[in-house]
Image (cartoon, rainbow, N blue to C red; front, side):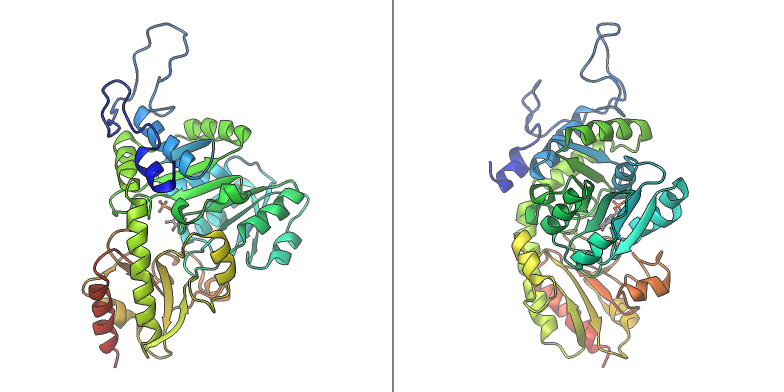
Length: 380
Ligand SMILES: *Cc1c(COP(=O)(O)O)cnc(C)c1O
């Protein structure tokens, strides 16, 4: 099955008991056991639930993994993944990561004795040099949030393999539609499914996938032990959203191209961050490892222009956290999604106070552009 077919017919796309073509919502916390001490397929919904299992099978197939796990949020999926490791273990992590991941690492995981070295993942030599005797894994996003930096997944996974450590990729921005890190050598993929996978800004969810049986067994154990699982209603809603991922991504990306053309020709706009631009530093690696370049665009206004006034003047595009929804969403990372990162560190990593991040929706592109245009005019 090819990808778009898989989105619709993958997972347990049909209910075996009724033939329902939409996986039913099994809203049951526990399951009747007919034999005492037997090994029932379903026993308790934290451990396993048929609706969640359908979603987990689907994401495993889409990412070319052998096992998928659904969590209450992307952050919960990332937390469970780091819980595979122990006190004293060291990680090489990308310098540009989602603000909440930065917070999880610095305010939570460090307290439990995990150690981290932050590295620019575009610099392969720096990645290799950061590996220590106690390093167990590299962790990064590509494209990154919010600077859209591109890391070469295969090259990094090759370095990791050479040193006997794992590669973990946050694939939220690309989605499996654009890139499948496990096929490039990664061991674990995590997602904030709240974003493109859900796609409609109506569910908070996270996913993890692996193709390593030992990791799969441990992740199942941790998912059950920590208990941050996705409920059956949200599992259904997420799988419903994922069926149209391919159709949505095609329109998101067509629109992103039109918005890029507009931004490139507008005098208010300074630097544009988009991997599809030929002169963008990560363009060639992105072209090699991604099907297309996604629909996340970051940009700076020219010096002296008021980012606050610009985003507050928009009428159609929602000023909101999150991304990947059908509606265009805009935000200022320094104040919003990456506000939990201290200013000096943020600036060092290239996230200026005026940086604007736009998640291009699937509205008619003329309307998105007209809204950007009228808000930019207010700055004159
Ligand atoms: C949003 C996001 C997360 C966190 O996911 P939640 O579902 O909000 O917990 C992790 N990584 C990236 C890249 C994100 O954009």
